[in-house]
Amino acid sequence: GNNVDRTIISGAAKLAKESDSLNITNCHSNPLVLRIKINKNLKVKNSDNIDRKLIFDDTHQHLISKNGTTTIKADFGKGAGLYGYVCEGVGLTGFILVTP
Image 1 (tube, rainbow, N blue to C red):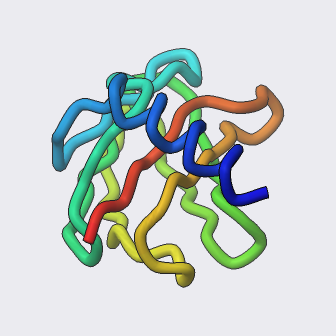
Image 2: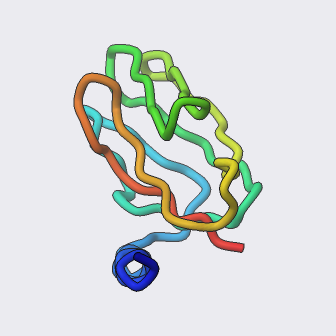
């Protein structure tokens, strides 16, 4: 329930690094938990030599070409909160903590 959600978000907030850029290498994200204000632009760099697809949910998926960069708006349709994402074919990669 809600208490569990608050505990998880609180723990993630302690690990979160405020940034507007995210680097993906071998489907590992740096920082692991990124904190950004809602509706800000987040630059995502794919440092791998193959294309990567980051998936937040069915409607928020981003294909990033090898050694390429894309910009993602920090608005995943549900407002502020903690959003996990996966690197397609690999699994959970990191978290975006969207703050008001």
